[in-house]
Image (tube, rainbow over all chains, first blue to last red; front, side, top):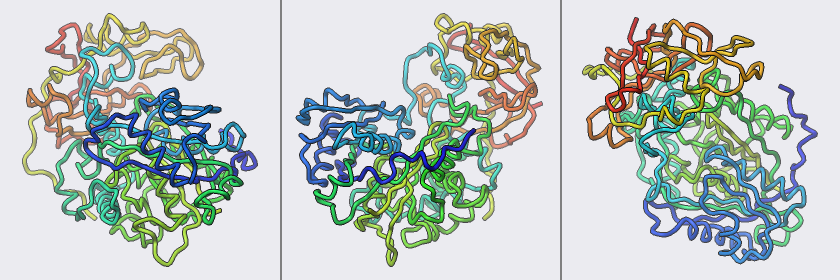
Length: 394
Length: 159
């Protein structure tokens, strides 16, 4: 496959993230997904210092129930000039930000909003099997009859193979869980704030061996939103003193990703493709990153990300995360300083980009001490479709 | 850091298909999926194979992803393979699994000997799930589901 030329990075520094906002995260929001979307988008506009009337672009998740007309109606948008939706859930995280930056860079719209709003606990839970009594066709027909019917099952098959090939153990994953929970304990937005120990992780219920309960992300209600505009417009807005620019973005699938478990090598994530394109476009490498936001639907994928994006060679992430020191907020590579999907909330990755912005602004509740955060990588290894974005201090 | 200690109490082996969970609707399957289930009904494991370039594929689909031919046949395979990966499901995520007390059960990804990377999802029977390991040799067997006797699942047993 041809490497995307670095000179093709048409979005470099052409869009700024000017507003972030969210609802509270809960087990039962008690309100509609439309209301959650409106509240989060209004909060992001307030943070930016614009009115929702000024929004003229929307980039949403395909899985989101709130379509464009509902939001034009509810937010009082005067003319939506540009809209897109990006497929899937975790695979759309970060991708929506890249798409929004591209829309701004192309001049399609002035103020574009990315959002995700869902009652993923009080309504349909992604971790539970559902659907009709009979399967019409497709990959589920070749999985469900044998009891392979939840994300923890598909990803568990991936993780077992990864452990076999890399030598990683459940205890290595436990250090990710312990560290992310420590970060969440400092974050008032987080759903899970009680610190845990490695023993707590090891003694937590086995859900789908090798995955313990404390390897698995939350299922919760809530919404998050991000506003982007041009750097010129950003200079007139609330956060003009600390601009957060989108430096590069990439997405990737790799081959054979339908059904997740038929990929050529289940120990290597599809994101090796995404990472190669991202670094080429950014003309940067792992050593240029000050902090990391990893899509942590399952804790082992923090190890997979460290390897896929080249922070350590394959098989060495298990040593890198041991003890948690390297990935703690005060460590070499602060990772998921908000607590991630694991302990803050699961909003399909949008909260990770928000936290990257907080780190640039210096407003994280686990802000790395004695270190200025100039660049943050926010990325995923979903084992199906992945996306990444680099944001930098403007 | 050492591996977790091996559990001292082993779980009961699976002896047949899980019960009460969604099964394919054989009437509604496209042609390019139905052959798998028709073969299984006849106690044969047949995998879709491109008639032109002869490359096997699973998941089945309408077009060969290698040479883009639309022609395929259902090629009988030996049923021999090895466990490529596996999980032990201990938390029931479906009502029938919970109500019929069917955990723990295993889900295995079996790589068939006919072609590198050719894998099917299944269960391994007659072995405590704690004794399953990657690269374990297995071979196919067929058992009708209790819920729809016309739906026969290919399952695997240790060789």
